[in-house]
Image 1 (cartoon, rainbow over the protein chains, first blue to last red):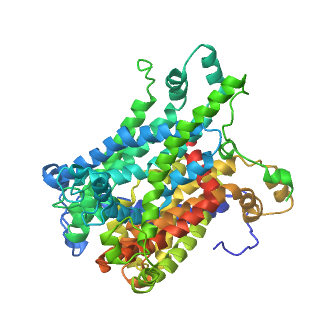
Image 2: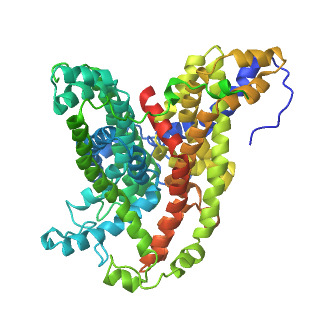
Image 3: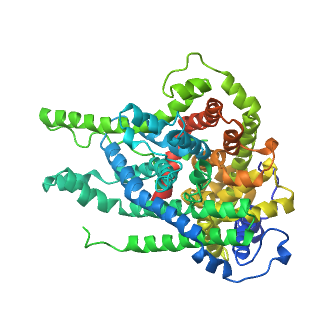
Amino acid sequence: MAPPKKRVSFHYGSKPGIILFLLPGVGVYTLFMLYPSLLSLYYSVLNWQGGPISVAPFVGLENFRQIAKDPYVIKALGNNLRMLALNWAFQLPISLLLAYVLSRLRRGISLYRFIFYIPVILPAATMALLWRFIFSGNSYGLLNNIFHRAGLENWIRPWLSGDGIVQWSTTFPGSWVGIGFFMVIFLAALVGIPDEYYEASAIDGANAWQQFIYVTIPNIRGVYVYGMILAVQGALGAFIYPLLMTKGGPLHLSETLISYSLYLLWEKKIWGYGSAVAAFSFLLGIVATALVWRLGRQRPTELL
Amino acid sequence: MSTDQVKITPPSMVPLEEPGLRAGPVNRVAYWRRRLEQIPLHTGLLLWGTLCIFPLLWVVLTSFKSTPELYSDPFGLPKILKWANYRDAWVFGRMGTYFVNSILVTALSTVLVLFLSSTSAFVLARFNFRFKGLIWTYVLFGFLIPHSILLIPLAIFTRTLGIYNQLWGLAIIYAAVGIPWNTFFLRAFMETIPKELEEAAILDGAGMWGVFWNVMIPLSQPALATMATFHILSAWSEYILALVLTGTTASRTLPVGISLLQGTFTSNEPGVAAGMVITIIPVVLAFALLQRYVIKGITAGAIKA
């Protein structure tokens, strides 16, 4: 709750006033976000297997050297990249397509937008259980039931246990859920394109497809690059679907970097190395974000 | 408050305009072509809408079935509505406790994050002082910090402070991780508020707090509503921090509770489904009521970026 209203002795814009106003927000942020994140980086250079931190030896970058040799990390990273591929090749294009179709509607936009956004706002923990029902190998497994009824018996798969399948079943839901979010962003950008651009191109004889390529795409490029960055962060930070659908299994096949670090931290109590895996994912995210941002800023004149 | 105060709307908060008919129909043929063009569009969108909604309706349906009914015919309608599943989830699954906890944490952390962010945002929007740029960068750095690297340090640190397994402790953490985004958004909004009203208040003898509380906060209401909506939705759904920072049934929240239900209700899938419906209904209702704030918030974030 806000503090009680009181007479303030310091005048508007005075130095103590500024400090007092900044202190609560910056202080809480420092204490519970910045400081713990630095601590985490510190833990990642320790050989800490639970127990008191004071006896955990400093090992420098040894944990990171171990990451490069850990076959589970390689597999987990593969799943993060799988999700990135899904995000870029499926999530963002579908979002843009839906937004484009919505922008051409004459009525019903808000109703569709409402429905498409529902998966985004539902708790991910609930959605993960829902996807377990969908992919379940039990007699109620939704997807296999649908295939069975449609006479597509040879499409039936062990979605949550098969190698080469479970990796997709645990990355797809996270990617699918984000579509509503990106659709809203893209829709706002599409609606913001002035009608005159379309009218001018129509006078020049452009058809709908040419309009999309030469008017729509260049005008939403900035927002699309922003979407690509968010999709990278989403892919590298993903963990909740593997964690709650398969616990990263079977045999760590569907693990992502973060779910694997959670396994190391909570099941194995290897706090030093587990923190290093989380830090690795964090640093990777920063590098990837910077990279996409740089590439996105360059004008791809040769592309259009 | 006079009406011209209410109308202050910065560019980022301009409501989405619904794209209607672009140019008036030139002739009858063009008019009908445009109308017919809408049919395939609606067909595609309805298909996608079904994909979004069907699984949820299936969960609702399942939540009223008995276990044998689910196993024998997962798509069939229940013969009788088995409300006992809801009692199972609410009482034996402790979803009732988790529900109340979720409401408390969400409400408290929303009030906290708005207070903590708006005070900083006000100062950053209005005054020039030394290290302002540095402090700004420092706060925005929080955008880059994923929650997953905070877990171990927070699990230890909250125990040291004695706020581990406390609902208000969890609320503070939720507020803390919301500060960068909320401060960013509120500062941008406050910068668009004209200074005349503040000046009038200062002439009337208002101090810094008076200006903030009686002028800035009322004028920032649209932005505060947007931020509150976002925070409510994300706090309600948050899973991993709640899992790590609470340890007993008495202080678990709904997302953690629903994932535990799955373990305790083996071969009672309808009971799990009932639990899922309990987590879903409040967010869908809240979203239906607050939809415009959500849309505004995401859109503004994207355009600023």
